[in-house]
Length: 80
Image (cartoon, rainbow, N blue to C red; front, side):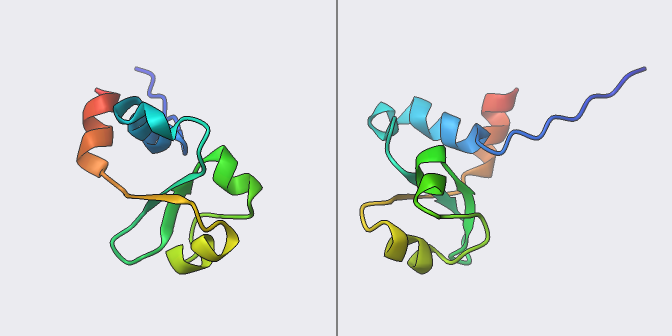
């Protein structure tokens, strides 16, 4: 038996963009309930936003940042 593990850090961003196409090309982050960046889109990363930083710090780098809650159940369902 073979087991494969894939790490797709932008999978949540892709799910949100599928759900809301207006987010395509926009700097987007997914935030944990504790107010920290969990995942940052490529556009957000180019602005200096990184996972682990506070959302307030991310907004300081890019004021028009789209901030969405990390929706783990949705991403698990999409993965299936």
